[in-house]
Length: 324
Image (cartoon, rainbow, N blue to C red; front, side, top):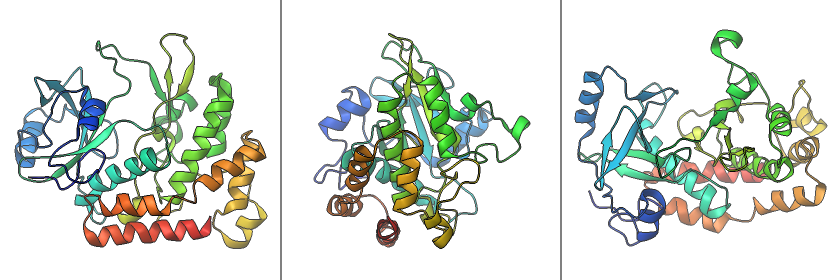
């Protein structure tokens, strides 16, 4: 399969990954954008290994390592995570890899959000998969300590039920950040920005496990990890909740929300104040989310989504933009 645009950054005119993406995603190793195996062959290997390649999560994920410019399935010492299109009852599931890739690229390129390095890659029968480089693995193979906010909050299915990832609020995540992140003032702005991004791009599944802290090996303090699992879920689950978690703790609602039952600017302004961001910074961050339409359209047009889903993606974006 030949790519029309770089399967990493979506830059036009490339038959495979551009040199910049080769360096960022594969440390300069010229990995092809086509895997050595097909999706059926991959499924067969997975069955033979009794599913031991699977990493926990809603969407099936598989660990890869790089060996002599080839990506190989591995049960240990993985350097990459491969996410094929999932199966299930939702819509357009074959387009999930292209959707996540596009959304992550918009976050990184347009909004300068720190994201995990990522790209699209293809089975040799043409099926697309999403690939991301593990940010918790150092070049010498050592792993950094990473904890998601379900772990930090001490919430599990056993102790808090099946909705343990969702029965929380974004404000409570910020409370935990205040407790564990010394550079909270800086990290809180990054957190606020990605909350706005997820709302603007209809990510209705940004739950507790989609936010994590990483320990700085040199200083021993904790910072937010690069952001991951950014996707426009409305393409696959129309009519879902606008957000995975409520903005505020203790069932708090602004007057604006009571009037319209949708989050709008007063809600995000109140949220920013409650998590400790000053008004000037809030205004700059907020306005910076609303003036990027031309660049968003450009990336959507160059993405690997089917044409009808490109239109749906932009329609959801315009709808949220109008609310905000």
